[in-house]
Amino acid sequence: MDIKAYIASGILELYVYGSLSEEENTKVYKVLQKYPEAVKEVDRIEKALHQLSSAAAPTSTAPTYTKIKNQIESENTSDVIPITRKRNNVPTYIGWAASVALLIGLFVQFNKNRTLQQQLVTNQTEKVLLKGKINVVEEDLSKTKSLLSVLRNKDIIQVPLQAQQIDPTAYAAVYWDKDKQAAYIDVAGLPTPPPGKVYQVWSLKLDPLTPTSMGILDEFNKDDTKIFMLNNPNKSEAFGITLEPEGGSESPTMEQLYTLGTVAS
Image (cartoon, rainbow, N blue to C red; front, top):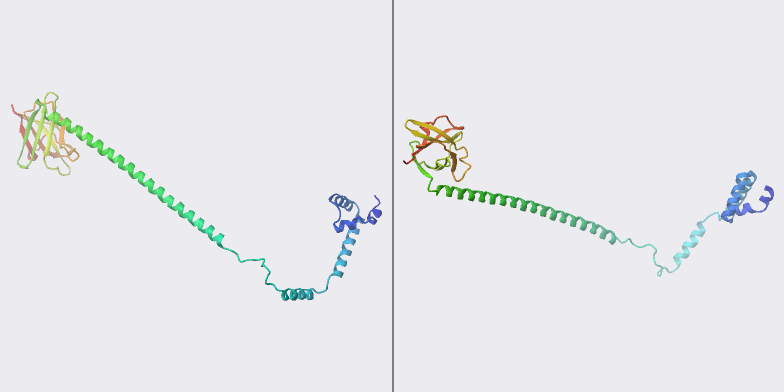
């Protein structure tokens, strides 16, 4: 390429002025990368343009500014619509109000859900308790019917037990089913045993006096009917109830004999 002819063509001036197309700019850029002479020419053109613009510019802008300002102030500005306007905060307030309303709604809904959940738990608990009460009532009813059928059996031997000296107000009864070797002990007339003590039921042979333990009533405070079933395979001639240390005794403590009764012959 004849670089002098290329420079003299005036294309570098157009490059500096920004009048070339994108494709032409690319070609000039490649020439500048290859030829330092072209780069120097571009620098010369840019400096010349700068000097020209400086010479054409006014030395002071103050008179011009004052002139423009006076002209604007002398004109009637009553019809001029201001470009700026006071900022309206309504959208901001609406946004905050919506946020607060949302939070309040969520809080109310949360409380409702928590109340409903607590109510559900309460209802379930009451349902369980009611079911338990029904089961207890049904169990007690079944037990009562069973006891009544036993006590009303004509083959049952009823033995009243009379109060002894330690407690003249005490009373009890034994309902003995000899065929089934079972005895139902009704102790509703005995006082509640003190802590560490239990009632113990004895089957007695009278001649000679031979006591045989039938068992202890360690569930005395838990059974509202106060009727307990004990096995009795003995040939009993009498029954007695004594107050013994917790766990029972091998032989009756006669000083703690509460009730005693003989089997009718």
